[in-house]
Length: 192
Image (cartoon, rainbow, N blue to C red; front, side, top):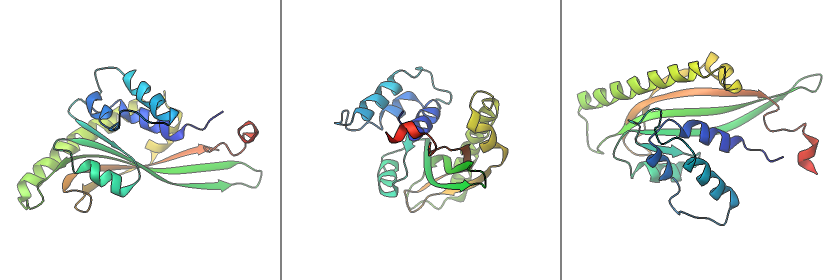
């Protein structure tokens, strides 16, 4: 059985932005990797109507250079999903508890030389409105998505000012996905 953690996160959040903005991620259109085609087909199978159509673009990844390059081509509202560090804790009786950091950002690009504080504040307000509705949607999905309940039980919202990636203003939801044996260390079938 293959571990599909990153695919699961990708597809979970791909439902929120405009579908055309999700499809833009497949910039090559094809790959020698079977997973690439599998993920592209999964996106094609998503409903045409997204949950938040005002989010026009989807950025998914943890490579800062690739993320920066993608954001630099965006001129409207975007959602960035960044997944990262996984920590594991093994208890005395062999229980494994894994946690993975996830950052979900909703932002609007800004002009590089813009220092109009009111324009930045307006973009922050627009992103906060979407983030508030996104957060409410996640709360409502807790029963359907087992890892979401723990992740939403304790989270943090912080302003997003990504000058180093590409000037943009918005909000980031910081979550920690916690799950027993998320990486399937105890699944002996995976190692055969």
